[in-house]
Length: 191
Ligand SMILES: [Fe+2]
Image (cartoon, rainbow, N blue to C red; front, top):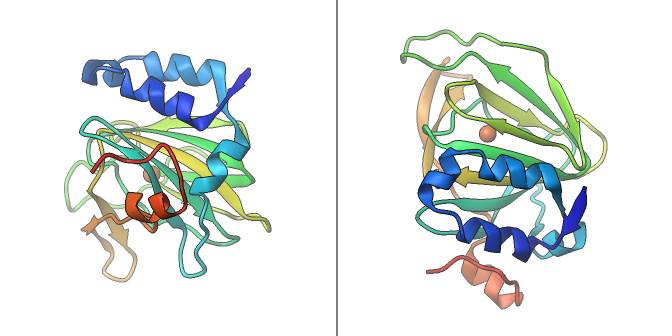
């Protein structure tokens, strides 16, 4: 598998038509290329309080993020707002736990399949027709992953373990384009 710098991946994504994201072009690309680790570093910012969401690039068709994971950090169980989602583990090891798709609000949470542990170089795809999931860093080392959403996901449903039901949650970035610009990072999202 060939390794390419992150800007090449962004360039490829920007050249796709909206219909391409619904086909297999991204899968084909990701089966051929890995993203060079050093080129992702400018977008890697860890948070002590929670896993980090760092925006790399966003337009009306897709958004690309770096997610950062300290040991024991995890997402809530969540859906992907009817969008397509590709995840690439860049560094470390992450655990993916799938649950049956949510058909209606009253649906119970039902695990499906086994937990999947992915390491650097692995890629996985999910959408709401396949499953909802949570991601965790169950290892003792930090981890970094790339997440491609087509289209962008400004909010999604998460399972509130206290309320025992799904609620809508607005998603935020820990770093944003303005912050990254101060670090001289490129590529960056258009305003
Ligand atoms: Fe997800």
